[in-house]
Image 1 (tube, rainbow, N blue to C red):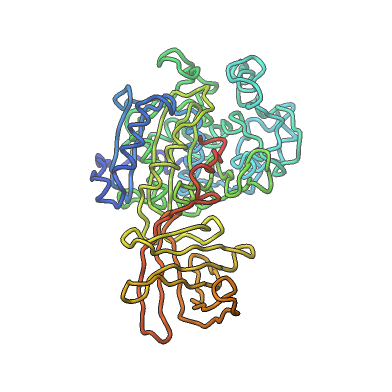
Image 2: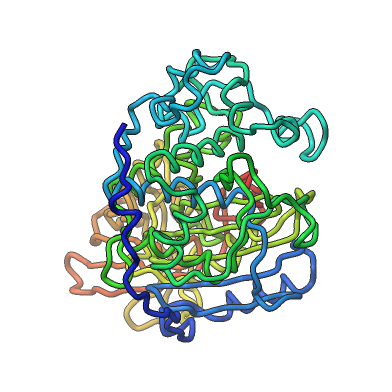
Length: 507
């Protein structure tokens, strides 16, 4: 195994102090009312003990607010895991010989001959980072800080890392997801061996200093405890990369921004795009581990969680995020170039929190350049033109979302008589196109068979569950136009009353 002592012994160049550019939400195409409403709801306490809310778009800090504190550093718990994986990527970019397909034991030679570690040779670095290691480790079924929790057992041992490496195996590597703070902490041993530096020293020199993160420390405490009452001395002086890091929320944002920017900070590449892509891919998901990832679109990468947030407008926001005990979050929404940072003291809370505020208020406030959504039967129902009384359409999406049927109620050109048309057509992604059909007669009017003729063509596109545009063009009457639509009735997932708490980890 090759170390990279050459680069870690080099002195760092001068680091320029970093200050976030600031602006109003509107300057970054965000409706400030949505964020303000979220902040007001946080202050009621109905969404838990949320301590911070930061929103950044396009690298501009548009909202920074703290609740019951001044934004000082705090324990981020398992956000440490995401940063730990990032540190391995930084080391690899700087020349460390780290191959995710190699056995993890290759990078921990001091433990190779220890009794009980032989079976761990089949666990790769990939398996370790993706939490698919095969260890019989379950830290979710028993309360943290209780004697039977694996973390407690690890912390009460002399060598935490050896304890994990001799832990029983219950499955072949890369067959199932098993969340393990112990396994994540093995990143500390790997990082020291490939870099020649202790994990905290490496983090400060090669990640924190370039990002101008100056106020951090490592300390293990109980949830809700007070700084200075925890563990600050670690086996072999290896700060565990599975938990224990303290950071300011504003500095947590810099980690998310580094990922959003593809690993480049102030013109200096710190992390490769390839490592970022590996980190936010999904190796465990709804198909492989449905008991953990209950919703489609959710999964786990290299110590980063991945999911898709639907907002109350029916839009979907792909995201990857770091998640720490007590609801410490770094959310990255790459499609809108947005970060949301939130910290909390919700160590035993399972009710609604920042996830609900995201879906109901913050994400709907983000205006997108391409705000059209795929059309489904969630769009079924009545839509109208607020500026014109008696003008609107009613649609039904049928045949598994492939066809549209509906009718258009409007007026003649002079506005003196109401006219009705039917609509039949096809749905393709975010647009439905259809024939507009004029009808005359019918058994309910004059007991005559109805006559049908093509009046023109039309299309509908929806910005979200509650607004869209109807376009029409007649064949013979040389009439065309655009009609803005507003939702009159709501159905399916577009009905706010049907919105469920879909993500068990982010409520």
